[in-house]
Amino acid sequence: MRKLFYSSIIVLFLFSCKKERNVNNFDEIIHYVITDEIADKNDTTKRFNEIFMSVYGHKLNFQTFEKELISYGYIKNLVPKEKIKKIDEFITNDIYYESHLTACVPSYRDILILKKNNKIVSVLKLCFECGMIDKYGVIESNCSENIDFDTYFMNFEGFYKTLHGKTYKR
Image 1: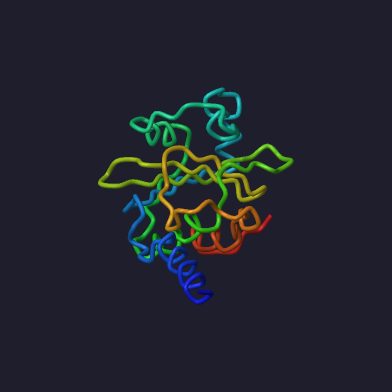
Image 2 (image 1 turned 90 degrees about the vertical axis):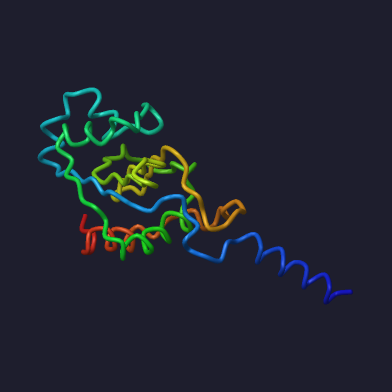
């Protein structure tokens, strides 16, 4: 009876987490980044500040958002296919998106736009200084269970290095 019980638990666990990494709902990632100098030039513009610093405080129009980012000086970089799998591991495994437990005002210098068939499915605004992430849209995780509260912090150093190809320096 015990063997049946433990076997059932193992089977439930295995079926609750998808095994294949190709189950995400995006096939392309575009990385927008802005320098502090360009951000400082825009700091008197209300809409720029909503994008650059706001948490859940503004609406995004997926159809015009990329043009808006470019108009404020964000630089567009297409993430190579070989990096997408590694980034996918960061954004679908290590993160608890509902938590904003920091003491700073974020500076979203990095913005990821996730697309499927050339259509935006999600936007992630990232502040690598304080660890805040502002998410819009849906990102499908490889695990259907809720993420354990003990693992909600993302490996930001590894994520930054994967995204930028260098170690983060404060």
